[in-house]
Amino acid sequence: MFDLASLMDELKHNDAAMAAMTVLEAALGRRTPEERGAFWHAVGLYYVSRKAPGDEVPGAAGMPPAVPETA
Image (cartoon, rainbow, N blue to C red; front, side, top):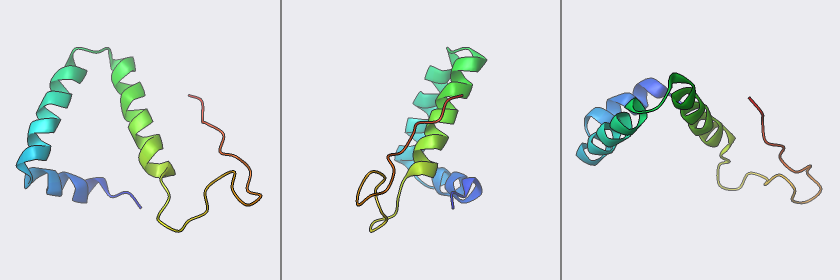
């Protein structure tokens, strides 16, 4: 499962990730709180919905297709 604490620890030790996060924070700083919330919600949906290699893909082999969540 997604572990934000370990991700943040890794970020602190990765110069490229820190630089990217600085750019991201600057861009998000120009957005409304609602837009920032929508962005992080979309990021969360992407990472939570990712499948590990070998997992069944929705819509394949008789599985129902994935339905996007609405806010």
